[in-house]
Amino acid sequence: MSPKRSGPTPKVDPKTWVPVTIRDVAKVAHVSTGTVSNVLNRPDIVAESTRQRVLDAVESTGFIRNTQAYQLRGGRSHTVGVVVLDVSNPFFTEMFRGAESRLQSEGYVLMLGSTDDSIEREANFVRAMEEHRVEGVLITPVAADLVSLSGLKTRGVPTVLLDRKATADEFCSVTVDDVRGGELAARHLFETGHAEVVFVNGPTTIRQCRDRRQGVRKAVRAVAKAKKVEVTELSVGALTVRNGEEAVDRILAMSPRPTAVMCANDLLALGVLRGLAAHGVRVPDDLAVVGYDDLIFGSMLSPALTSVRQPALELGVAAAELLLDEVRNPDHRHREVRFEPELMVRASSFKSS
Ligand code: RIB
Image (cartoon, rainbow, N blue to C red; front, side, top):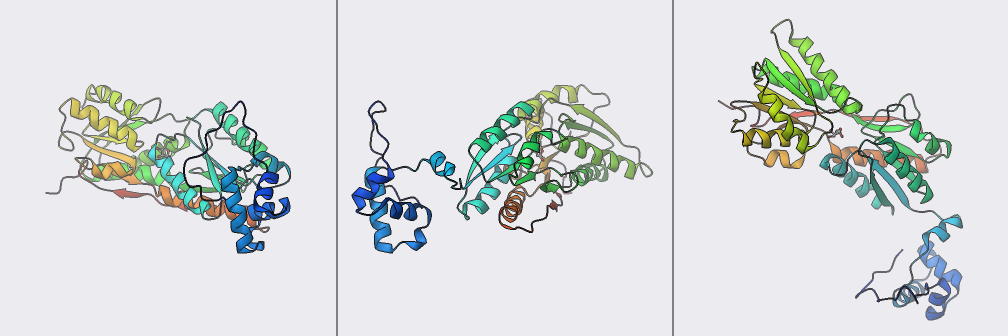
């Protein structure tokens, strides 16, 4: 329980500052150090008047608990580590918000890190989180083989995979059926009359990109008997707005010119829309555009972006629930919570007659 601080934090000179100790607080509050410790760790067993007197002393002395020392004495850190692929992508920050809202209600704080699809960055974050004695980890792993998570498993740190399926029952996971999502987007374009489609996809080292491509190919096979459709995959180095914008020159140079662009995520789609606007290409009249994630800005664009919705907030909440169960339930069994994608059709790919 931390006191509500009122007024500005006292200015201290780093050269002369001496940390305020629990003994200083006890002296000011006229109680034992054990009572101060109880107020900080088990406030429910301390009388209200005593508890308030101690909290007032904590505030007036500027006492701040030394978490490391507390943990070394076997205390809990009340911290959960969250590692995602790209914190600049609103999909991941929305998923983080879902997990944070659920875990904060249980007294946890969250540490957030972004791997940018780097194995080395992931390993550094996992190590730093273990050093902070996090009580659990939510992670979108970079590598397919999950080897980097073996240390967490060995040390019994509850771990839930975010937006990633686990093999067998080694971890809990929350996922979205990206194969289905890719199929929904491609079928929508075929069913609205597009036969020449370009699919702007990220690196296939990213599982989500591989699955979305698999869904596109499944949709091509499904319509092959009824109509001839051609999907050309255009690969970019990362799923960013800039890469989407830079892909437009390559799209406009294609022959025959595609009539529709499907993007592996909404950041790419936003970049494609920017590039098309700069070239005076009309959407959807000259070129239909479909994204993936259904980020909040998509519905606010003009034309509003058609996109495959992933329930990012719900994914984060579900991951937090799985983690809390693993931390608290001795009979916990790992499981996958799977969500279905939903196609949100809007003006960037569909003109109502
Ligand atoms: O990080 C790549 C993509 O995978 C994100 O845009 C989101 O779609 C996630 O599922």
